[in-house]
Image: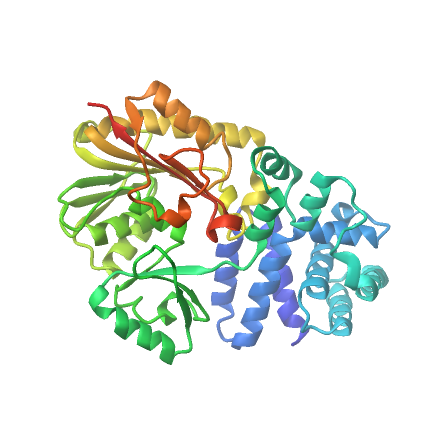
Length: 447
């Protein structure tokens, strides 16, 4: 390991701080740029960059415990070096403490901040000496602040979970934990052959109870390193999203028109199109970029019954009025249920922003529900854990739109239906359901 690798991480942190680019896209592009590096170095860059960005609140708290300087007032490169180095000390056991400290000092000097070298060295070595107990945060007595610091989550979000959920800490811990990958084999005749190839490649997999041909998969290198993916025989998708698609109740023999209004990257659209051999799935989103993602997935899966289109869901489309049998509304949301996968989410949420999202959800629903035939099915879902965007929207639909709640029990496996408030809506929680935080509801348009 040399300082250049850590400098690449620093450049990622600085660009992330100074731009609006999403961290996973930024890291992906940097790894593509340095594709000539060996796998070990690229893994280091990815882990440290992702970990430093995700744990920013925790790292800054620790830094300020051992520093007389406010982290926010440090020069950006010094702050970045400090953050990535503290992450290595506290979260990466295989990196020697002395190496972390020495490389940080070298990098500070290389970036022309020589005067900060003693400060950075002192802070890091003090942290290294006491790191055994640092992450307990036993000195924090306020529950909200404790959860915020321990799980690097803004206090505003912590308060929402504490107010609305029984186990806020369990949710935060699960969101920060290792994320499993769910894979559905969509061509049953190839299933045994695909599983055999997974075994041969040392890929670990476990069947998920209640979900046919769906597996939790580990130890594979990227989607195209998973046998069955490039041939179009598998879908990689969180099982919560699969459940939302299953809630539509579409069968192989159906010849229905299904509209997915905010579909990118197209997971639910493709799942339904693969299930329903005939019929038509119209899969829409706002931009060419997003719709191209849908098209790429549909082409890989050989879906002739999926039509991807650019369309703003808030703009009324007269041509679809009373033409749709199933309407999928997985609408824009705060994303609190997936912030473990997308670290930027937690730092960009504001109360004003969440209010605007709720207004947008209702605006879209008021527009697109006109497309459904009487007796048609509406699936309203989000990838968040927030009653204002979930249960309160359900109440809005029942009060203001011509719909009746329809039971999810026939469509969602029993394992996901326990101790729920209603039979027609379901809040999946990462600590209870081992999946993304996801909300699913089902309605029938009144005759």
